[in-house]
Image 1 (cartoon, rainbow, N blue to C red):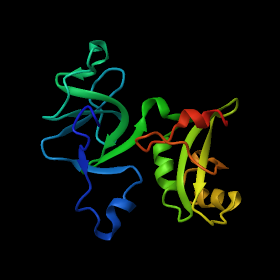
Image 2: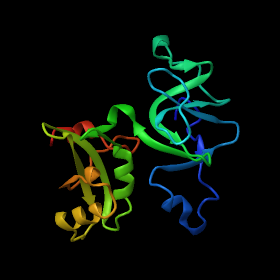
Image 3: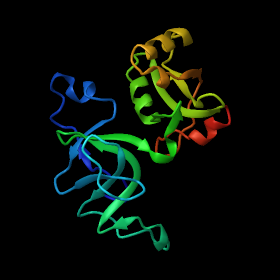
Length: 200
C-alpha cells in the first residue's frame, strides 16, 4: 500500500508442498518484521475474534501521516491505519485478504469477494486474466459475473469453465461467464472495472 511501504506481508518460506497455493486463494502470509495487523469491526472499531472477517488495520514504522491537503480523509486511529479492506487473521496468525469492502457482493444474503474468485479463476490453465463484478438481480440481490480473458489459442468453452467453477466454488459463488478479447487496464496494471460495468 502506498500509505505504508507498499509491501506489508510476505509469503517467502511457505512454498513447501505448495502451502501458499493450497492454503487459500486469498492467503497473503505473515506481516513483515516491524509491521502489525489487526482486524476490527467496521462500525464499532472493536477487535473481532481470530478467524472472523472485518476491517484490516495496519501499523508500521513507515506509515504515512495523512493525505496532503485532505486532513479529513486521514484514517489513522492511535497510529493504526484503517484500510477499508476486508480480511481476517487465522488462528495460526496468517493473513487473508478478501478485498475492498465497497466491492463485496451480496448473493442470497451471502458475502462474495471478487478478489477471491479472481484468484481461483487465475488457477485455471487456460485463463490469462479475469475481473469479477456484481449485477443487480431482483431474486438474488446480486448476480456474480466474471469477465474472462483466455490465453491465446485456447478452446475453452463457457459450459466447461462453468463446470470447473462448480467443482471448486460454493454454488452461490459460481459466476456467469463473459469472454472478452481484452481487459481494460490502468497504468499500474489494475483492471478498470468501471469500464466493464458498462457491459453488464
